[in-house]
Length: 236
Ligand SMILES: *Cc1c(COP(=O)(O)O)cnc(C)c1O
Image (cartoon, rainbow, N blue to C red; front, side, top):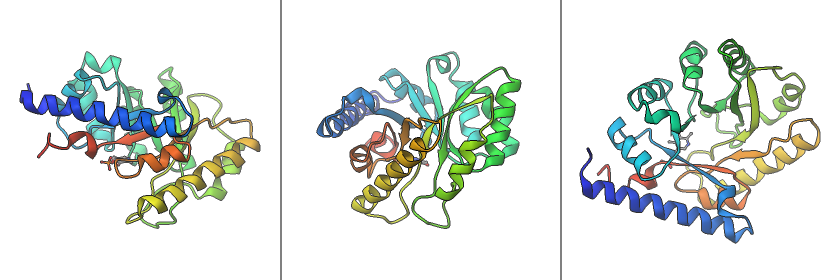
């Protein structure tokens, strides 16, 4: 059990984040439930992650595959009610174990990885929901497809095993929230162009973190990935 004060703080943080996300959506004339909050539990142990589930988070994100596997296992049977999200880089040798946890994968960053996930999911009788990660910031340290790689990719998607929800991106390092907003706007425009030119609706946009989720929602995010803001006063 985590300390009751920390649990209260976690509950308050979760309520506050939900409220802030709802306000940002409403400002755009969108309903609060059009934006899903993925609570990024990568900073905390399984016990604190359980507390997060108990205060009402159903979408949990991990950035390291091994941490996803460990939490998925250690939080059984609660894990079954959770929609897990893998938000960080996935190496192909970790695909099999990862697919078993049935996460939404936000970080498909190469055609080979997409094929590997699709093959493994099909072999396990599953269809996983995935995002194509795009390098919009031009930051060479960031993974992701270059925008020009996407039109041909969308023409030759795997027939089974994966469903493409849409595009995911991160703002570049050291960008201000305003600059991040411009990058998110670019991602939305890219999505609009790709959706118009292919059979894929790409209806979801995974973008925005603790420091820039308002800008992301203004630009059309349907999933925001929020970590540190949830743990203020909890992990320190
Ligand atoms: C850690 C992480 C987040 C959450 O970041 P915060 O700034 O702590 O909200 C979101 N997306 C990805 C890909 C991450 O690795």
